Length: 325
Image (tube, rainbow, N blue to C red; front, top):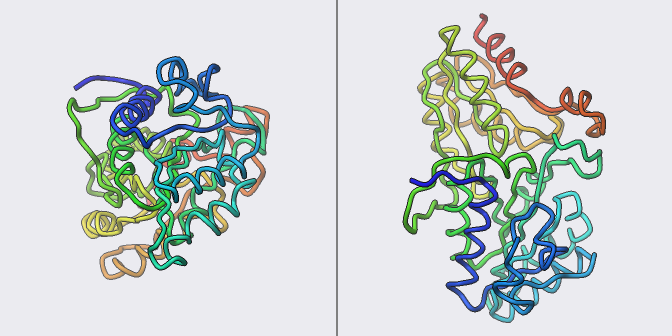
């Protein structure tokens, strides 16, 4: 296995698509000669040319709208929205067009469009650049929402996304690009809708996704010293949602904690907690608990920002309280 960064995994996934499928092209702000805001497409413009790597105007609605049209016409566009915050400027194209065209046309048209975007806080870039809206998009039938936490997952899930005929929101956390991990050699794929147990445990199940997987794994390491064995389930995709893996884990541990970065009120974690309560009620030894971001706009101040999002200590405290330790 090679050890590569999250950024390198996403870059490799895009390069493979450009090399293997002539219908595939990239479009977004500053992805050409500049190489992308997060350096994912560095060197692509020189390698593949401006017909395959298209710098776009600063208009998210135009980027996604053009991508929808290109996908309907038979191409395989990958459009980049610099951050998920800016996707609000294209939400009509995403929710009312891309997600619904195949259904509303009776299957006459498909929209095999991949929208790559960046989520999350922690980089001290202010309240309007640090939000986590992936849970919003997971409420929209017709969309796939992918939230990889590791280089392996980013590469394997993207390869599966290339086979879909429906639009995908591929969400990369801003703090994960430098994270490194093992990636198998060869053309492996990871199916959408297949969660993964990232750590085995017997005392409590944590259900989480994206960067919070790493936060929860760090909390689990802390608690292991105290004799508490935590199982960490990484959802990997929010739509489709794999509750079977989650329920299997909860039946074993008999306790569940849901962790997400977005604020608790209206968060996707409520959906997970509700389904766990419904599907595994007879196995639970206590209520499903939640840890989430604070009910505030993300502060620009880095010390305040750290207080606004879950960290390992906060997750560990919640588990101790849940288990009465």
